[in-house]
Amino acid sequence: MSSTERHRVVPVPGRGPYGVAVADDGALWVTLAGSGGIARVQTDGPARVHAGGGTGGRPTSVARGRGGAMWFTQFLADAVGCVRLDGTVLSVPLPTRGAGPYGITAGPDGAMWFTEMNVDRIGRVDDEGRVEEFVLPVEGGCPSGITAGADGALWFALNQADAIGRLDTTGRTTIHPLPASGAAPVNITAGVDGAVWFTEIGAGRIGRLTYDGRVEEFGVSAPDARPHGIAAADGGGCWFTEWGSHRVGRMRPDGRVRTWALPEEVAEPHGIAVAGDGVVWTAMESGELVGVTPPGEQEWG
Image (cartoon, rainbow, N blue to C red):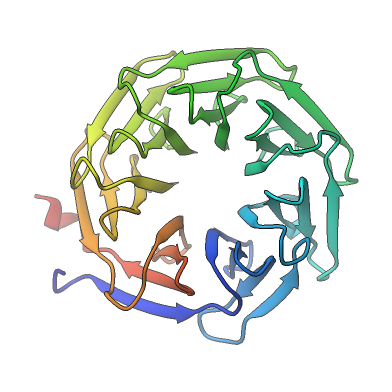
């Protein structure tokens, strides 16, 4: 750890923190995959847990929507949920049984878009809970993470197809195969540098795909690091978690990378989000959020 990097460990109520997102008011929202809820965590105050489809629902990913609402997927409950600004909770059942919703993001049309990992579909839900589903032209692709690109389309990882997909809001799909065999992309984010960035948990790499279809892949701390969560970084590139090596990393747009070890008393880094003050927060399945204050840009050389 460098002298300019600091860790802060914040306990999270409930079991199995997995996804994390920053709300409009700066609070952190964390899915509790182990206990079936979603928690609002203030780093300087008490946390509050909201119901999330029951203890067996396995809330997975969380994203900020319109009007301060926080939306989340319920992987085993075949539903998406929403906690509105007034604290009321909405649970929306999906039309397809066994869908396995995983990733979720705010779309360019004001709706929330999500992946249905088990049935090769992308879903759309509006503020009133109306759901549409789009069937993908890939069988057994296992769509996982999803993000809204600067081009007005939705971009998603196809974990078992070693590909990244693009879906416009009319339902038209484009599939971009990845160079690395066994890449197994999981999560994806839209960078500020004209590309989407994604984790390749199988290949131990971070990928970058431009909107015109050019792919680059970059190594991380080790081939078995198993990069998992990802978030866009100011200035381009991304932040990511290394599930297999217990680290958090920062990749620049040119592929330069630095990683930092997480505290020994926590385990299983998954989701990652960047707060407005620049602190990078990681959800640890062992029951915590870890905030990393990164070193200054001058330390990159």
